[in-house]
Length: 228
Image 1 (tube, helix red, strand yellow):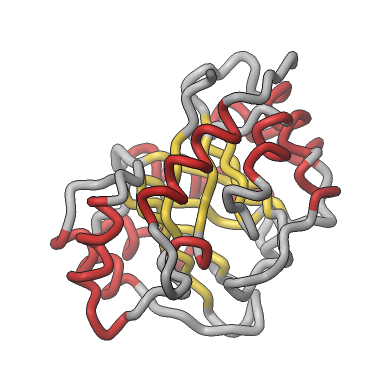
Image 2 (cartoon, helix red, strand yellow):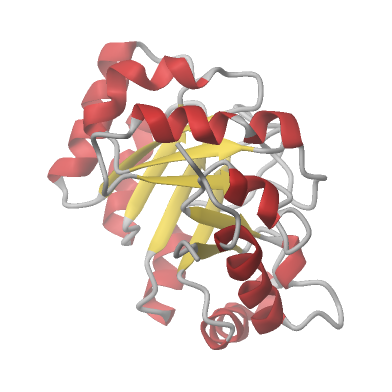
């Protein structure tokens, strides 16, 4: 089996008790926490900002992935660095120049954090070619960005293989699949070579055993061979 990580997205969690949420996810043996930052402009939803990232940072030693679904990542990246995120990812589709994107990625790396880019379902993996040497991770969206609990889209997941090939010279760079990933869909992204499954609502459904879900995602994604 290939080793697969699970990053828990807390978008659909109970924010009234972050402590309990984080303890539950630690006990479920997730590998990372995935925090979706939405501004109501780049995507039609609003979640939270760097203060919540900092609050989660104080609660756990797990790596925190900050996924910026915001219009001006260059303007706000430093605040998420200060909040303690281990990796900071923003969307290729933002209306910022390539020069600004390169500068933002470099600033994140200079702070000792992992820089990443995310691509939405309609965006081809080839757009990442000019950024490969700067990336610690790529998030391939398997739903339209902006809301938790959406149904998995298998067609965009095929781009995971394309991204893996682009990153062939960067063995430490990880490909994350984000959107509708669960025990039922993990084999699909596993077959395309995913490294990290971002799992959200499947961990927080009433009566769901989060630890069993994490174990099943890792098993189902990791048992499918990827031939590159």
